[in-house]
Image 1 (cartoon, rainbow, N blue to C red):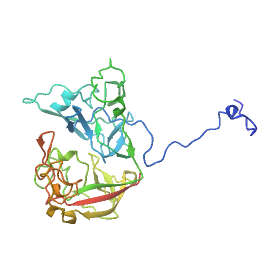
Image 2: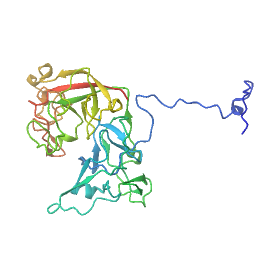
Image 3: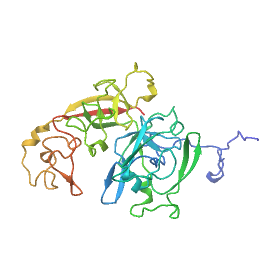
Image 4: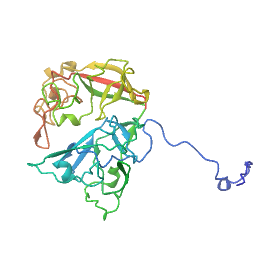
Length: 328
């Protein structure tokens, strides 16, 4: 095919050769892309206003599965995914079959554990950024095709005949964004929250609080400290990166700890009196949280959400915030 190498400047704008392209697309802080959560992620927290489920919380480090949709960074083939009755009722897709979760019963069989197939997540997948808002469960039905030990799929979320079933929020809510090249600030827990079989105790997290993105100590790599590199655990939370760990790969790094701050009784706000009681909208932020930063105050003083008392972090166990500079 012949290619015209001569571009005449005297041409009218509408006559300019179409083979001259502009490669600029978007700033890297919030790259423009059509990202959606994978349909096989278990539901985590319910929004009673919209009557829908969230599957990932703001700040979660993410990567892409084999079909190009968002999952927590740190997930790998061979990891376990636990589905419960809530997932069955929400129409979550079983990661091993590509079909809706089924066969669960609140009494007889309340949960089932599945192992992520070998071909569902590319072994070379690495973090691409963090999500910038809580992410709802994926809209609509999927069309899937078996590939090796996994399946690839596409969404039919704008086709009301394809099992859409959700008419109470905009189709645009199906898409999410990722954040890169930025500094984020998350709570830090001095305990390992992903130890196998770890009990929910005063030094760990409640089931509700596990939805909150955080950084935490890792049983293998130890505690976080300023200057350390971090990677993501299986839930997309932040743990230390140790280059000496077996299987360590620099491409797993998603950021670097800049500083850690002690936020217990910040500015003596626990001593401030303000209208309203703890958890009330009338109370001033800070005085209603016992002096803790609002980001790490998860209702330890009896606050409620949707009429239900929430139990989260224990104030004696988490009093620090960590700032992470995203390197993706």
